[in-house]
Image (cartoon, rainbow, N blue to C red; front, side, top):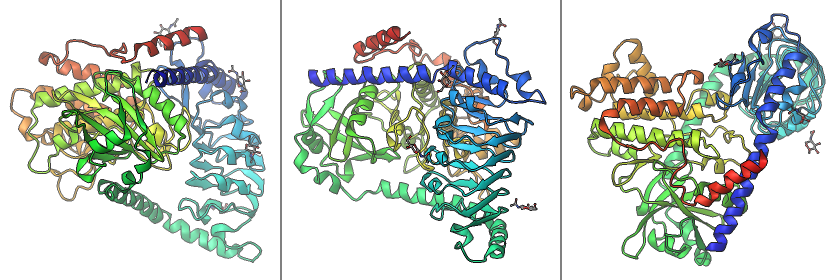
Length: 614
Ligand SMILES: *[C@@H]1O[C@H](CO)[C@@H](O)[C@H](O)[C@H]1NC(C)=O
Ligand SMILES: *[C@@H]1O[C@H](CO)[C@@H](O)[C@H](O)[C@H]1NC(C)=O
Ligand SMILES: *[C@@H]1O[C@H](CO)[C@@H](O)[C@H](O)[C@H]1NC(C)=O
Ligand SMILES: *[C@@H]1O[C@H](CO)[C@@H](O)[C@H](O)[C@H]1NC(C)=O
């Protein structure tokens, strides 16, 4: 036990050091240098960059307000996206972009950039998800190095003067969904992307001599058929797109359903030989356990012990035969991380303690299975409370407000005070759990990272896997990158859910002709000044109407389509707390200081590590 915890502590320090290294090498100085160099290297005849990019007053996050710049956090000089489209910029591809080392999207479209696309572009844009260089004057060949930008989802090179063959290695980009090179001078066979829906003959039209893939076999005389096929496909692109979206949601729905009804516990029975494996516990106060204890406590992970399931895995209720101590055990969805990476991630999560977060007590790895042990939450999930199987919810306003405030506090802590900061990425009413006193606790934080196939400090989504339907920020379908503001959007949906009693996907109260989700319904009502109709009737007319409408305003700000207009989680918490001030839910305010850290020594080491580095 002691040895185990030493091991974790060492691991924890290593991961903290790593984080520090990342933040030193990727640090804000690099990003400031990056933008400054880009500004200097490009001709800017319309003074777009000169007028907006002012480097004289260097406050925290000052570059985040520059035209075209979007940061990871508004108060941190770390560039997430750079959009310099249609600015009349001239010059070569700005190599200094490599110093914006956390960049995930670059849009330089509709400018007059010339020269070649750098051969080592993968070294300049290692984490790029979206790259748009279309409508410029780039010439030469498309660099094969692009094949090493393995996070690329969308690559647009249309309307340039690119020549030669499209590198066949680009077929290795297994996340790619959009690829277009129309109106260039390209020749030869196209990469075999394997029939991806987003890559059709249309992606290749108006080139000198492309063939293969959707254009038909090379060597034959099929220029005309290619053009015809291109035109035909062009006509139905929209239909295909709509179908793709429908299919995507359908598949997701089916897969969610399948998960709610797993095939019993065959997987658990196959772990027979490994029952002696110890469960690593973070708290010395908790009794030692083995896998066999977890098995017994969960009835061999029987179906009847399932208390919830979602994107990250299935949660089981566990009752020890020591007199009834209860836990929750989560069986994680398949993860491609090694046992070592997993253990180090767990060591970090094990130290994350806050009144409004579900405590991770321990974990266990057996063969391919990864099991997490959590503190038991007596009152289940907010989702089940709000949407009981029979009848409507009977939750009073004060309880709903208490839950909103507590959950906001937990999430704000993850975003702003926790070290390392954690973006949840999957906030919904299902991950807000309630203890015996109905104190809300956020679960599942830190797990989204484990779902990603490759470990990076960036939080790119796995191939289009977003959070729960209805909670997903609209920009995620474009950027595929999780941000704190994305969490704020999801949290706003939860607030709407609390206030309306409606589910985020299908709104029971809306007219049958209405096909949108909860957020869309609210904005429809808002435009007609009928927001009162949205509120759960059981809450109205009880002297709290003004609180409800202030609450609604906060929720609406959170679900603003523009991420920049959404408040931060810290602001959300402060606003909600002000609305609920007369109830005295919590006297203390520990939000900016990590409290109840469980293992305080880790935090001391963290501070020491940081001081040694600065
Ligand atoms: C910019 O990036 C280059 C290459 O990675 C590096 O050598 C240089 O130190 C960086 N400059 C700054 C100011 O970070
Ligand atoms: C720098 O900018 C901040 C915020 O924009 C402002 O409050 C401050 O007064 C500025 N400082 C100087 C010296 O201009
Ligand atoms: C991708 O990166 C590897 C390792 O840096 C390198 O050996 C390889 O040549 C690169 N591939 C391309 C197509 O540039
Ligand atoms: C192909 O080129 C023609 C003539 O320049 C243009 O009218 C057409 O829009 C182009 N097609 C695409 C898909 O851009």
